[in-house]
Image 1 (cartoon, rainbow, N blue to C red):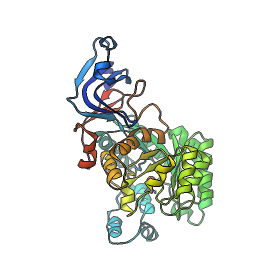
Image 2: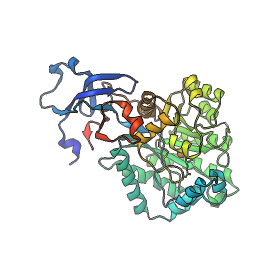
Image 3: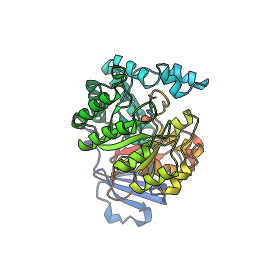
Image 4: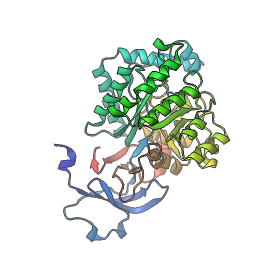
Length: 404
Ligand code: NIG
Ligand code: FE
């Protein structure tokens, strides 16, 4: 029997000190009424009519805590074998990410380790990571393939993610097909042929459970033309396009994302003002990854993006090369200290922004009619995020079911 069958169908979360709605507003002394997994009422406690509460509703006293929408991690690479700690240590003594890639490290080394891993071991690792995401308050997570880089491996990776996503007590998982993460060794010197192959796998990826398609459009990875071919094939297969853009060099990925109507352009460390304007005009969300930016010793141009009016989302960019955290509360703290966001702006980016990045308009805010993905935090004010560098949830609800 699933937990949702044993839970009462309505739940009243009361005595919320501050309810951060995801729109940037805060409601004090608030409550949230949940019915059948959806928010039926969210607002000041004094405004909830007693008649609106169905008989038999379970009541929880949140003792003045801060409540936010469940956090959304809009960029992660959780399926990989092995680790790259040695190259990370090398990077710390001055070697750059491209230099390490040229020496056989980087994505290629994780591809070898992932291909060599036992499938059960990979799956077990992903299950553990998903639990860690949930335990730190992430209720929706984007998860990419991209460390197998052959047809059976990449499609198998989509299936693995779909299996993990169907387990109880995990975040909702948005599966992204990223077979165009790098050119695998067996296609060395034949990148166009690999791109053609990836394009032909998109319909099967969709069938297997992927919802998004992505490409690493950057110097040393895929050109604009190759990226366009992958994304157009994904779009034709019914996948939502997103793009790793202008991270290592300004090759035009953000512009391509705008032209193709991508849901999200990610990283954007090297974009200029005209790129930001193009993203805003096309309604492409900028998904920023502060931990990776920090690992690269740089920072995305937040002021330009903000001035252009681009919607911002945040991602952990969990991956074996640059970021091992699954903590979106840490990502929020770093968005404040490293990118220069306000706490409120960072929390909006980690909730409503993430939902926009994933084109999931049923979540990311606390409002009537939306999914009851909610976190009560071990604090009474959102400023705690920028102090604790890893604020802990007190309780986590996914579609109204308490999962932590
Ligand atoms: O988002 N940029 C491409 N992919 C990852 C890094 C992948 C890796 O180094 O394994 C990223 O940063
Ligand atoms: Fe990435």
